[in-house]
Image (cartoon, rainbow, N blue to C red; front, side, top):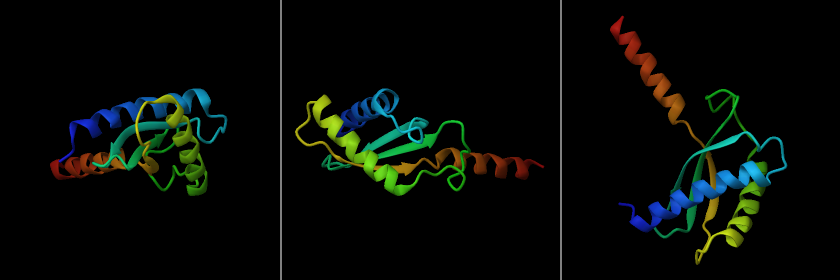
Length: 116
């Protein structure tokens, strides 16, 4: 069960990370990242940022950014967040591709096949 505090921190991080991507990112590979959700652990130690890539396929295999690029990017975001938001401990940022769109597309396709 998630706490109210972690929900508020998740919302704040989603907003701030989206702003950082649009305003402070110079790397063209990272400009097209769309933050779909942020989930924070109950102790607010880890924030998992779910993303898709604008203008590319919704399939994970076709829309991928190198892990090393995202790891460096997460460090940069964490340091910017530490300066921007008033929080005792800025969580470690982990990026994960959002597969929910692909999953829902597969479910929809299966349901269409059942109707036929």
